[in-house]
Image 1 (cartoon, rainbow, N blue to C red):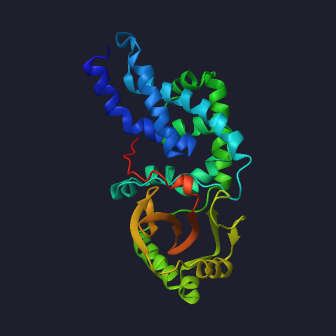
Image 2 (cartoon, rainbow, N blue to C red):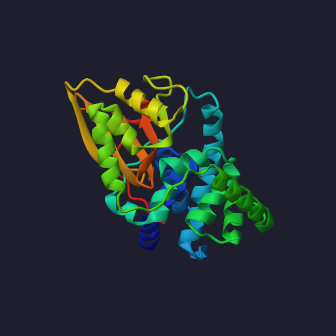
Length: 291
């Protein structure tokens, strides 16, 4: 039987545990599974032997997520077209925590996907959540020296590949104008809002119509967006906070068919993310994330 304090400890850390798992896995469904399994492990622990619940729980969730990630990586090697994380609907206040919003953004998660599972775990625990090397070593079953090397390698890799993202007060305004221009299909309006080197990633997973390669450049992205405008009959667009930033949900006859997000820097859209894989649009329950 789990005592009340152990239940409280788990409930207090649940948002953190989900966020760690999601940033490691890029999947809300798998992250929830890992959190549930963490609870089962936690319930069997002798809690009188636990010094600090937060570190102990993160150790469990990290090991479970690492095991799950190794399986997912093998599946993703055969993925059709660009891979994007499952969309995570977040509350608007997440955007106020710039570092947290960046850590769950499409841009960051796409970069993290290029790390090895261990590098990803170490980067997330150290750079996002600020755990000490000794704590990460215990969670990953590696020596502190090895963890330091993994952290250094992961930081360098992420720094080389992460797109430019600068905090700006006009992000919501730029995003609103961009989505309005995309809905209207006006190529020039889109061109005025797109960075010259903008990239569009469209994830259909072989199960929905999508571009099989990244689309590069303002002109090509604008014309692609004009070409994929939905039939307005039965279509409904809803504003949402997606992965810590502005986004929209496109419903057709009440069913979500597209989740879209953007990255914005210096008043221009630098990246567009279109989720169309129906397997990734099944569970769009808003979830709390925390550090």
